[in-house]
Length: 106
Image (cartoon, rainbow, N blue to C red; front, top):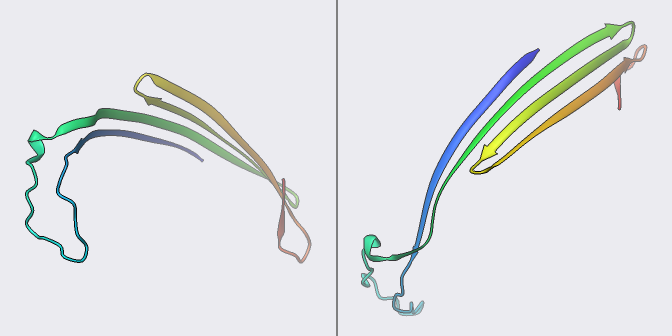
């Protein structure tokens, strides 16, 4: 079995702040003035993107009462000026005991 996955994400954040009148929780005033968003000062304004790809494969072999599996995954990721890659192997073996459920051994 083999497979491939890919994702591409982008995000834009624009955080702004404004001073408003204090809120009295015991006597709230509704309809207070709020300045229009385009007149507020930005304090965080970012654009970000992420690219990620993964390739994986798995093989299984049965020998008598043993089932052997070998799985591997290679990942690549890139965000702005950073990139990373990693390989994750995953071997396994399962023994089917007579009259019992299979037992996985690490």
